[in-house]
Length: 486
Image 1 (cartoon, rainbow, N blue to C red):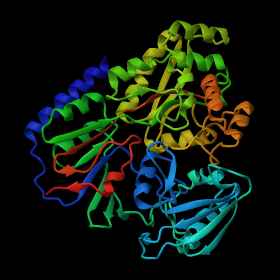
Image 2 (tube, rainbow, N blue to C red; image 1 turned 180 degrees about the vertical axis):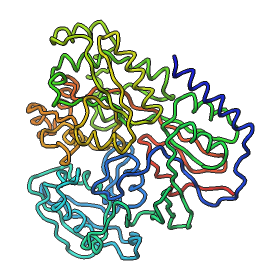
Image 3 (cartoon, rainbow, N blue to C red; image 1 turned 180 degrees about the horizontal axis):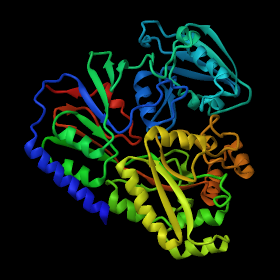
Image 4 (spheres, helix red, strand yellow; image 1 turned 90 degrees about the vertical axis):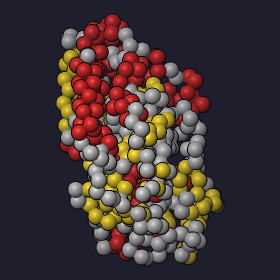
């Protein structure tokens, strides 16, 4: 396979480069983290891309967080359910102030969530449309009153709290975030420079789009850590280096093939089933993905507390069967070959996945055209519905409400993440009742997307970096505690 030869050549190139290029001798005190894509928006009311979400987790504090089973737990505040439509939240006494030195209090919480009333273009706004009013009792206490009962309401309060004074001034949080998290922004130019508040440690996020160059920079000592977005051959290469520590583990981030339901061909369930049967997921996982990757059948992973339904769904309902796929296309009245356009980013591993799927689909009578775009253009096209097929990954998803956000008829962007414009009254009714088992079964049958896999996680770092590990959802939270041994 051409890609295998290319990767092998890259590994040889890296080995030769390392033999002739010395480790960067310049003494550094900052910790440099190489990432594939810079954040797009550091205002938590707008952020939807993975890099922005991961950085915002460090910059801001939210009222609620999640435990290992994805159940909500207190973070910035604890809560009491006063009635089916009223919740009282009490802020922690020893909470940190905002990065501009203003104390954080209940007024800031109210201002943050009240601001959604005027943010019609926020993808998160619909999540809080059920809030009737927010009443501040004192600096530490406030009451959320809902229009309708919602027993899952606390789990939705994940937005980083913003300072009320800057909200009133219409401050640009997207490029100049001001939160109360463990880390604050110092500057944002060619790199994103952050500072840890407890010890002053400087952390620099450096965008390096090419995975081979990221590996070279790590081996040369120009960067200290990288995480994810590498082909398995390069991960194995790093594992062979004595100066590098590689940590791996299972992942919960869900990769999928998105479909545009404004396309009359893709509205046909037989066509969607054919596409699912035209992808050999086990082969892709075995050949070109890192260890701990696993087949997925729904957004939330098997470990999630809602997944009593997991035993009823099997990814092999859509096993690789090109002959069956072709039969389904013919039964749908499709003239073969079916020409489809697949959009993805320019990331080498994502292009590799696309190229393999292109080859796998050919025997099924599908002619897949690949269009790889820079991340900003690609993601903008996805949100705008400017695609036929695309590939993306849901990152850090914790609550089952994601199914409503992703597939609800009222959740078209910017009001949610139903980027394929899928409409299903039966699914809407199940989501309204929060019947997650029936909803996931319906989604599995109707294929508003084609589920692919939960990609394994890894982090690679130089041996003088301690306190960093690969997390299930790929978060970067350990940057708040990571140590650089000089």
